[in-house]
Length: 357
Image (cartoon, rainbow, N blue to C red; front, top):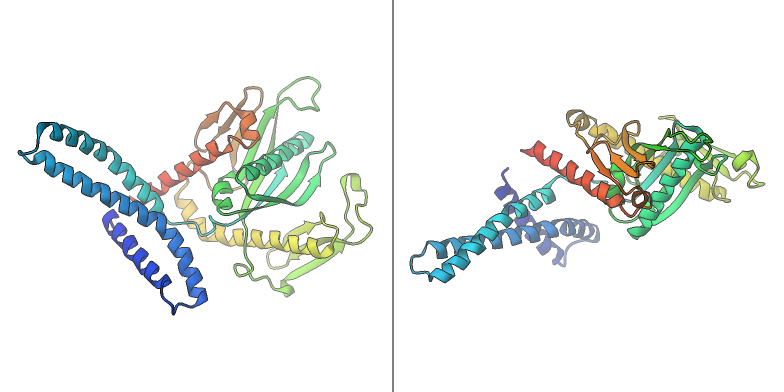
């Protein structure tokens, strides 16, 4: 299907959905489904209308330029406007092609972000803690709700592991390319000789799953309760409020002890388990596609090294798109993280457009 046929299809469907929504006979479930489709179609339909209006203007200007009766001054103005329009039309078409790209159904969802210290001991744990804070500040800048779900502290105050839920529209679309190995190069606070060390932390970004997405049967779960413990093994609570859930069919294990309530810990653990199972299903579905498209943006695999934070040189380099920013403080504070994420999204869009041509 060429671009023009795609535009006709979108414009026609937009009108169909708009008319259906105005019908008094539509049931609530269908209305909700159509409303969601209408909100997705609206920016595309508006862009199509803008393109066609500009194409019509270009046609009128071309006729004016070709008409021998046109005043010379008017022709000169028309020629300039025509040239300006000819430059704008390809960008309008490109923007529409981006809007027409197949959507990842998880893009609009909230996300669960899991960060784990990798190689580097205490320094890796400190770096994991800084990444956790980076995403927390980034969430605040975007007006998203950031909730800590699980933490495991190291002796020096960093995180061996930390899990957070980030709630907001389109969170997963913005953060999904953060999955992978993040590497830091700097002089550790624990290093007396002043030598630069390399440490790593892994990030996994999972789309939040609804109960309707993943049906978890009670018979498939083994739930153990135990007493919560903090740094150094000291008891946090005097009751068995911590929860460990094992999903028997897959062997996935989730532990939760941050809340004083066993019920709340169980609810959080189930939410993390559901997200992990949902992502596992998504990975299966996208495995074939990932095998055929090994692009610069990468697969999102948490074993793939994606970015280096070099503090002595003040730079952050994303290895998938060869982008380097000499503003490490602003990236780590979350302020400049969008510059990297926008570039990753643009690269991904370019690769998917190339697949369609």
